[in-house]
Length: 214
Image (cartoon, rainbow, N blue to C red; front, top):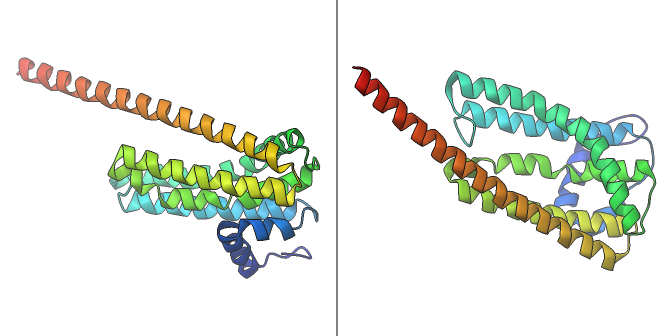
């Protein structure tokens, strides 16, 4: 991806290297060259993520239900995934810049933006495994935590190799982030269980009222 053109084959190669060989990829990645490239990357990752969400909705797989409602929700998820990718690129760039600053690394915004775009390769991977939540809520939680843990590994390599952060400080920051993610994941699963129980009780009460009315 250079000279204002987008090379999809190179994009696929870089995505593969990011996921499978992050230390090598981030140690050699370009941290300058304009924001067009990371922006295109974010849009492509967002589009791929949206397509997966849409597909799961059409196939009645995962948390998105089937039928007309499932298709509608899947289409909205497709649009939202692209918007979230673009917005998340710039918000993520700022957050990564702050983390890099804490870890005594590169504080150039473009460099952090480019690293953020590369880390967004996790988006379509996470969306692909979204079917796990539809199978079982706890299975979905385990899969999500594994993906988050791997993302932290990618983040660690990105900070140390691409942004030249202090390795010891970066490890501490990554451990703290993992702890926060685990905490909020369990809070989320607890809230989802309470909501499910409330809806089940509500449905039972509604059915009993209908029987009494007859």
